[in-house]
Amino acid sequence: MPLENYLDEVNLKKLQALNNPKVLEVVETYLDICRPKKATVITDSEEDHKYVKELALKNGEEQKLKTEGHTVHFDGYHDQARDKKNTRVLLPKGQKLSKHINSIDRDEGLKEIMALMEGIMHGKEALILFFSLGPQNSMFTLPALQITDSAYVAHSETMLYRPGYEVFKKLNGSPDFFYFIHSAGELDENNVSKNIDKRRIYIDLVENRVFSVNNQYAGNSLGLKKLALRLAINKAVSEGTWLTEHMFIGGVYSRDRKRKTYFLGAFPSMCGKTSTAMIPGNTIVGDDIAYIRVNKDGEARAANIESGIFGIIKDVNPIDDPLIYKALTTPREVIFSNVLVKDGVPYWTGMGKDIPEDGINFSGKWFKGKKDANGNEIPPSHPNARYTIRLSSLENCDPALHDPNGVYFRGIIYGGRDSDTSVPIFQSFNWNHGVFVGASLESETTAATLGKVGVRKLQPMANLDFVVVPLGKYFQNHFNFVKHLKDPHQIQIFSTNYFLKDENGKYYDDKVDKKVWLIWAEGRVNGEFDAIETPIGYIPKYDDLKQLFREVFNKDYSYERYEKEFAIRINKWLEKLERIENAYKDEPFMPDEFFNELNALRQRLLEAKERFNMDIIPPSKFEGKLVHTAH
Ligand code: SPV
Ligand code: MN
Image 1 (cartoon, rainbow, N blue to C red):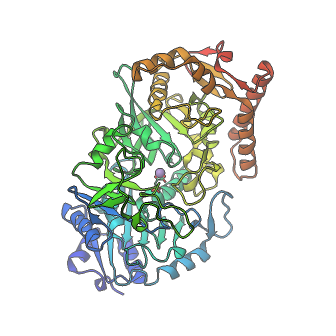
Image 2: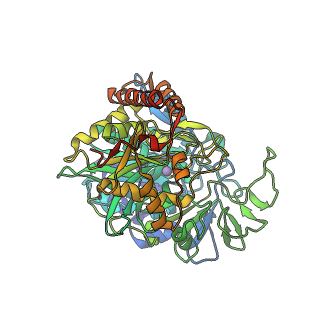
Image 3: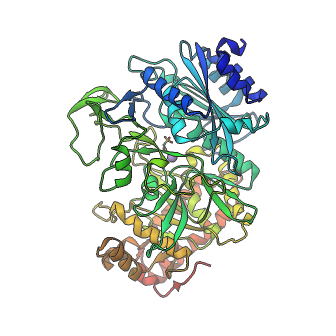
């Protein structure tokens, strides 16, 4: 049917003003399939953004809270996290992917999803939105079109991404953009997706598009977030000159606060990514997704493709996250999701305040002791409850957020949830070793994805959930990346572990201690601290940490703790290497560099084991191997 069927004259004009035949074709095709009662085009204007915000309230997808600008949104009881099982890459015949990547035959998947989309927007209003992934008009910019029948999804995207209607105008009719079709599907009386069994997120690399139906949780529904991340990874790997990563970007200050050095960090969900990016005293450019490109001077530069945060709210309190807490408790645009609401006030676990014993939450009417169908007690707020804010709402937002040149950065940090193997921080010997460290990242599962928590899983670069190309090719792109750089030592790679436990199951580190590890890393890339060479990499000297803990927290850092938490647990590491080897040995396209690093590390561990005749080797044993710089 012609577009006039869905769009009134004003909206049609907005669409036609883009002069882009593919935009018209995509919009017409999917409106015809999804058949909304009408469609509205959202430009970059404030007026249009206001329309989206108000529609979310009118539709009942969001409710106003007491504080000015605050709203709450609920996702369905079984739609509280990313659905890995039903997120699949559409695989063309004859192509192969890793066993770690969920896929479905492309023809079969397209047939299934098209059938599910048939008339799915019945009776609803579709919104057509345009965004720019990354700063507009920069080497990072990727234009993206979103069609959704959820005003909550659209509202979230207007807060989390840069507007792109004007970017589309400048495309001069080019068909080179990503597009996303989303429908929450039929809604129940609480306005949540009803047909969760028909939830599907299908990624089509051939056409740079993603279809997502019967869901609302942002990690499943927002095209611009994890869906675009997947398309961009494919684009980066096939172009071979840049990286798309699940990383924060932040400015880390030196101990004397005279120097600021940008770092990137990849941590699986709920493993400290946002809190590392939000360390008090430092600045934040982004907390979730980074594009890394090389400029004409051969410098690696990073940009946040987002302009907001969709963050975990659990444990956000005035002590641990003062800046976020302040932003969440003062008037401004904030969407709370899946928290507890009573009398127009949001509450969440770990907020440092008493929580009411009843209210409305993701299960509907809630009271203390309420149980779900399986007899499990329902918490007041979901462990994956979140807030959506603009980065500009934060006092520590870095001025370079929208810099079209991105930021020049010196370090990458990989960190997982590891209770028994690695040390709080180490620096890798060189780029290839660092890529191996990222590729062999493991983490114990959390509530950020559906399924059991606490199971150790492979999490290469904290990006496994989003890698849609064979892993070997993804790693090869990382190994090759350094060749594009003028200074191969520009980027030093670190590994952190905030979750190491002692023999009584108690964490060695306090939540805030990560500040010291980061100051050490910042000093290392600027030639400030010596380090001790161990089989796994360079680790800090006791004296430096002792002094830093004193300076930063006025806290005593005991030698005993150092000797324990920085010990090299040889057998645990060897077990890890065996797991890693098994996981990757049958992977196609695995780079030789990967196995060279694996074998070299194993060799170093075995040599140390033999030399000291010990399984757990305290750092003092390696003290003779003091090194100044890493290269
Ligand atoms: C993550 O889980 O990595 C997130 C939230 O950043 S989601 O939008 O669900 O991906
Ligand atoms: Mn994430």
